[in-house]
Length: 214
Image (tube, rainbow, N blue to C red; front, side, top):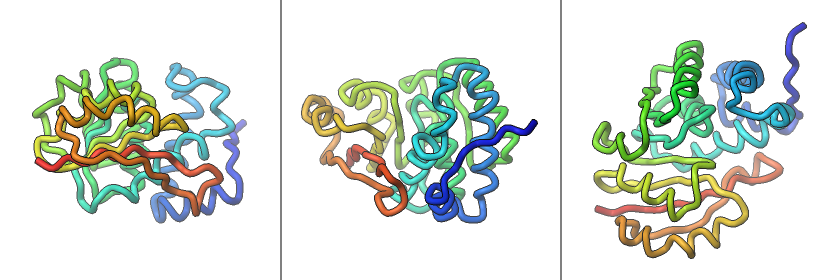
């Protein structure tokens, strides 16, 4: 019996808007998450009913903040969130997925190959080991660590001007306050909290944007 993954009418409309002609790729990605992703422990089984809204769409809407033809590093890619979701939504951009755990890297490689994503490279290692491996314009992250720690992992990946897009929750403002000094020390010139996807999703995505001008 085929696995049925729930998607509401509103979520389907949002998915069509975000992914366009590549919606079938997004659907296959969700199927991977719902099957092997859960089987291998990349996501908990309780996440199955909300794979679209809580995970894939929540991440993919951040694509509207990424400039055209950008080179993007995704730190702690795990289950491809946000890295693979963004790579499907933004085929014009190039993505370097950074993940230290072998089982997750193996899964990411399998899914990337199955989806035929030519704009994705995968680096097995920690973020600090990826410094200098690729010139990037944007660094993304989701559910990696508090912003004070995340700043140390992400900002050094930017050699020149660029920005960090960190997907956060309701405590984003508090995290920005606590991390302000370390962000400035690492070259962050401005930090602000934004929401994206409010016109598409029931709950918009909160993003901390850290701009670097070197």
